[in-house]
Every structure is written in C-alpha cells, then in structure tokens.
Image (cartoon, rainbow, N blue to C red; front, side, top):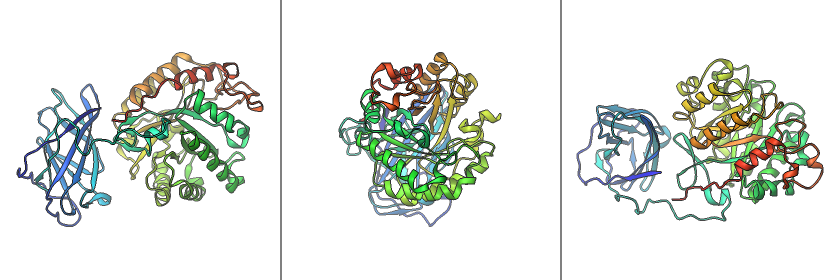
Amino acid sequence: MKRFLALLAAGATGMGLTVLAGPPAAAATGCTVEYTVASQWQGGFQGGVKVTNLGDSVSGWHLTFTLPDSGQKMVQGWNATWSQSGSTVTAAGVDWNRTLATGATADLGFVGSFSGANPAPTGFALNGVACTGTVGGGGDDDPPPATGDGTPVGTNGQLRVCGVNLCNQYNRPIQLRGMSTHGLQWFSQCYNNASLDALANDWKADLLRTAMYVQEDGYETDPAGFTGKVNSLVDMAEARGMYALIDFHTLTPGDPNYNLERAKTFFASVGARNASKKNVIYEIANEPNGVSWAGIKNYAEQVIPVIRAADPDAVVVVGTRGWSSLGVSDGSNESEVVNSPVNATNIMYAFHFYAASHKDNYRAAVSRAASQLPLFVTEFGTVSATGGGALDRSSTTAWLDLLDQLKISYANWTYSDADESSAAFKPGTCDGGDYSSNGVLTESGALLKSRISTPDNFPTT
C-alpha cells in the first residue's frame, strides 16, 4: 500500500464550509491525519483518510483538504458527507460519528479520479485548525508490529471493511480464500476434526463457509439443532485459525423477506454467542431470486441492526439480486446497488458465479463494481450453475486470476463428497478418514486446492 502522512504547519487558516446538520461545530485544538492510497488504476484511485482529534471533544466536525492537481476529482465517499468545491474537498461527520472525543479517530474513504498526476492531498484541517503528523511513516500511528500464531486469524485479527476492501487489523486490504460446506442437513458427516485439519493444514485455507439451509429440511425444521451445528463449526474453524462465514442459506423461496423473522431469531442468537470472537463473518441471505433490489435492501436494513446489537464489529455480507449476481442474471447490473446502497456500515455485497455458465459479461460487471462496492464471492463453482457438468478450467482460472487481482475474497462450492462435479471430494470420501491425499480429490478439488494452498502473504505493515 502506498502511504502518505500529511505534515502541515500549525495555525494555517481554515477552509470554511458550513456543516450540514447537527449541533454547531466546536473548535478543534489539534489533530493528526494519515492519508493512504489503497489502490490505483488507470484514471482512478481509492483514498483513505484517518483523522485523530488531539484536542477537546468536537461535535459537528468537518475535515477539509486540497487536491493539488487540477485533474483530481472526488467521485464517491463513505463514513462522512462528502463534497468538493474547486480543489477543496470537505468531509463532514454523519450521525453516528458526528462527535469526535479527545483521542478519537474517524476512518474515512473515497474514490477519486485523475487525469494527470496523482499527488497526495495537502492542507488537511479539522474545523479550521491544521493537522500535524510525521512525514514518511514511522510515527505513533503506524500499525502495530505483526503478532499472532501465523494462522489467518492470528495474523489478521478482527476484520473490517475499508472502502471497497476487506481489511485486517493493520488496516491493510486482504483476500481470504476458502471453501463452503454443502447443506449441513445432508453432509454433516463431512465436517469433523480430520476434514477441518485437512482444510487448515493441507489446503492452507483461510475460510470455512457454513451453508445452513433454511428450508429444504434445514433450519426451519430444528432451529436449535441447526444453530448448534453452526456454532460448533465456528468453534472448529476458530481452533484452527480460520475465519467462519455463517451463511443463512436462503434459496427457495427466493425473497429473503419470507424468512425475515427466522433471520432475526437466528442472527440474534449466533451474534450474541460469537460476539467475542474475531473469526466470524455473517452472510444474511445466500441467493435472493425473484425479488427486487429494493426488497433485498429492506430485508438487510432490518436484519443488520439485529446483528449489530449483539456483535457490533463483525463484517456482514448482503446478497444481491439474481442469485447474488449483482442483478446480471436478471438482465440488470451493479448500478442498482451503487445508486441505492444498504444503509449500514462495515458491509460487503455478495457475488456468485459458476464458471461454465457465467463468463465475460459477469466478469465485466465484477470489474466495474469492484471500484465502487466492497465485494465478497461467498460462493462459486468451477462447473455449470446446476452444480454439475464438466469443469471449465479456462473460465475458472480467468475468474480466480481476476479475484486475486482485485483482492476479492472467495469460498468455493463445495467442500463435500456430493455426487456432483462441483464437489471437492470423490463420492464416499466422507465415510472414511482420509481428506488429505490427492487420490480423494475430484478434478475441481485438485484445482482449488492448488490455488488456495499458495502463500497468502498477508500484509502486516
């Protein structure tokens, strides 16, 4: 990651802009700013601004800075109300971070465009008072040194969404790579100490997605029993240093609002039980289908507060229209989400694909969306959308190369011995105890293991 720390002279004049809503702004008496560029592409970049208040508590704050190149523009921002007038950009606190206590930090981000050079902004000021810092790094607000046991969770700790990326405890973008279970009602015999040891140690996976079907003989038949199975797998993943993606696997019916009350009950339970863990990610609706984006958004904005009440820090993944295709499978595209995002923070949006069925136009949608939305491929297959047919090696490779390039996390369907070509293991594998030898892998399993087991190289500085 390219890093800048803004060093500005004390006593610089403020850049006036009226704060939008809330109580009158209090004067700031000191601040530091760290500016980072998380990613850059032709004509665009993602910037991050971390401002720390060193003075008295301020309410109704605004941060101003100058884009020094005339070709630079602020396109879209988050965690503040953003505006640009000439070369001056203003970020004003929103309801949930409007007050900055002494020592408090606000992490802001934006997508920008540029036509010439892309130098770092200058003139950062909090409520008209210039911010100070240390040039070139090495300051007090540098990330802490790497700690942990070398496992994915031990290295990365509690995850969060920063801009369009999934970031670790060092505020660095990362990519998680792992596998999804099949339905727990059908393949629970595949998930035991031996199989999870193989996933963590042989596959070197970062992530286990737990697919808990709601219908189809799933959660609705035994809520307590299925909740217990999910919690057990969370613990097993935690013990091996892997992240656990809890998947509320709605599929038929496709409107997640059908299961709204079940979702609230389930996520209130697993959220409260797992709130102290650092390895849990919540996926609130697997593959919405036959429903509008407005309907999905309505569901998300009712379920997410239930999770936040129990577990305020965990990342939440929201399914998208057309079987989590960003609407592409319904003839739409990512613009409906970009133009009407879910009203919540620390969230990502799900994208699913099956390599033999979903090719260039789907990859184009992901490439476009990735600069504007935090994406997580919570499910994909190497075969057709039916889960069967021949492995499409070239399309799968193209997909995985793209996800690697964009640092988009993924879970493959499935870590099971289902009698379908999307399964990682040959039929009958889960009746035995061998999950490690190459002889038990299908063609799809061998391909995914070869990709997932390569080094992660998670950034810690």
